[in-house]
Length: 332
Ligand SMILES: *[C@@H]1O[C@H](CO)[C@@H](O)[C@H](O)[C@H]1NC(C)=O
Ligand SMILES: *[C@@H]1O[C@H](CO)[C@@H](O)[C@H](O)[C@H]1NC(C)=O
Ligand SMILES: *[C@@H]1O[C@H](CO)[C@@H](O)[C@H](O)[C@H]1NC(C)=O
Ligand SMILES: *[C@@H]1O[C@H](CO)[C@@H](O)[C@H](O)[C@H]1NC(C)=O
Ligand SMILES: *[C@@H]1O[C@H](CO)[C@@H](O)[C@H](O)[C@H]1NC(C)=O
Image 1 (cartoon, rainbow, N blue to C red):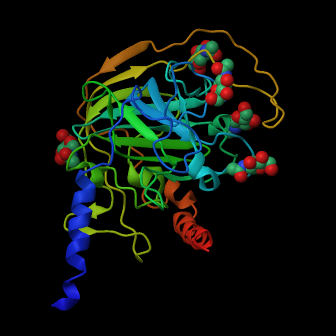
Image 2: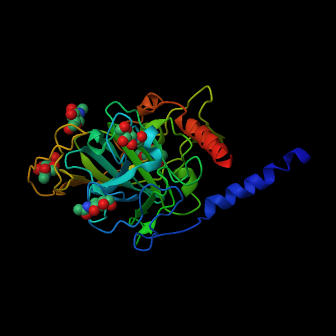
Image 3: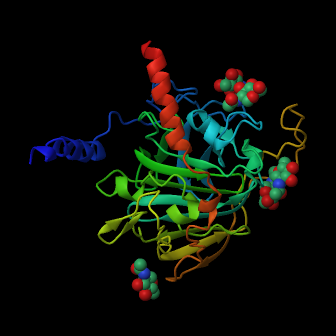
């Protein structure tokens, strides 16, 4: 019986961590930096700028979302190497972030569920500094030391009323694919925005549509929490990896012909800063068609062989190890 003693405070701590957050911000009242060791800022103003160090991301709509990606290009800018310093890249102007150059995103699917909003899709994410061939990794507000990856990254959405911080979120990025889920604060948020499956990739964690060629927003069910199958919970490293859950059923879908902004993709080498060629069309977010459907999202639910297989194993563990070593070094 004594052997159970340490478990009780741990369990209680887990419950209280799930429900309480040290601070709640809006972009208008966020501090310069919300976490120690933060490379960028949460005071971003409203002028988008391609050297912005803003680390506030918004998940509002299929034509109004942001992704975390490296601040600078280079072979050493893999998501794994830069997870602590990613900056925010947005489709929409006005947040003081960088802009995702027009045409970078080739397909995007926004779903709004009772518990979260989510954007999934495909693109040439080398345009936002992810090195070609990078299998990518997972970003979340917890990180090895609780300060988040990126450190101090904040996520906001107005999908559930007025703009609010979403304390639980998870974002996978590779050079060709992205997925970002932001959960409404509440008891379901930690499980539905679970961040422990960092090597499993987008299609396992956020089964949904990743096809290029379409931009769509839908209402959807919340679906099942990643990794939880009835009463059993899968953990990475277990010998058998269960299939991804089916994509949550969706309805009231609206498709868009394109999403974008006026920022052209810059041409030339990534290091010499060759100037951009402007292609000059205006931002287009036109609604092409509305379909109402109760069928499930045309899903690529791909099991563990989806994008997940492309994720390298263990870098979060590695980072944790490095953090411990650094902590020891600091203590000396
Ligand atoms: C862009 O952002 C950087 C970093 O915050 C800042 O130093 C620079 O002055 C900004 N440039 C413009 C044109 O606003
Ligand atoms: C990548 O290498 C360049 C050139 O050596 C350096 O300036 C930059 O800080 C490095 N980036 C990271 C994330 O280590
Ligand atoms: C992605 O964009 C880069 C730079 O614009 C280009 O060199 C590369 O060929 C593109 N990759 C794909 C798969 O289209
Ligand atoms: C999704 O919708 C189909 C058809 O309406 C239904 O049979 C199925 O049970 C639904 N799935 C979930 C998980 O609700
Ligand atoms: C933005 O991209 C869309 C779709 O790719 C295109 O129709 C539009 O002309 C582009 N606008 C600019 C400014 O490049």
